[in-house]
Image 1 (cartoon, rainbow, N blue to C red):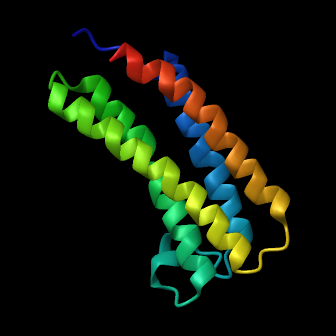
Image 2: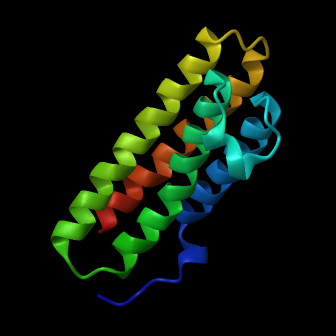
Length: 128
């Protein structure tokens, strides 16, 4: 299978957009502004922010893995992992709401970004 240029793939660009907004939201909602050390925090909100970031960063990596692999098993497994990660991010949004985050518009922005990503994701996974 010839390798496609990742920067031309709409799904990859949308995954990078998702990373960017996740990083911005995590920085905004967390009590610990050192995003590289959120995982060390005892704060529930920081742990959720770290989880959002982790999954958002893994999504473009998984897309790249699927694009570069000739293995049907790896591509199928990757699709499954991306599905889980997008569902997780939506769950984390709910967790932020339950943690008392007042600025629901930020959570809704992240949900909207997931929705936009999923549209291009569905088209992309059919192309694999």
